Image 1 (cartoon, rainbow, N blue to C red):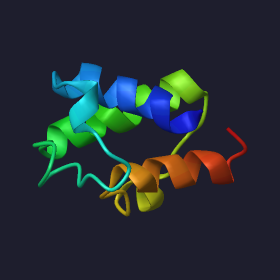
Image 2: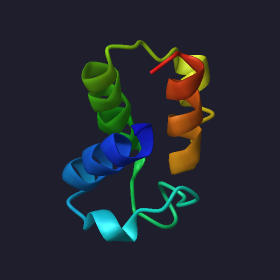
Image 3: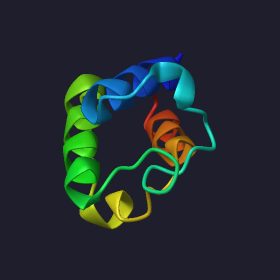
Length: 76
């Protein structure tokens, strides 16, 4: 499932436990991601899922569910 893979990527990128990451977690407020973390996270998601996330889409990503919804809309 997309969420499990995204959760693993986030945990590795941010150095946090997977169980702390929920679908409705806010990347900045709940998980402590700063703007650099967010960029690196987007790049890793692009790499792992073989997609390209446009900057205009990336700026809309605030929650873990935003990443999952985007990937699902891309057929991943």
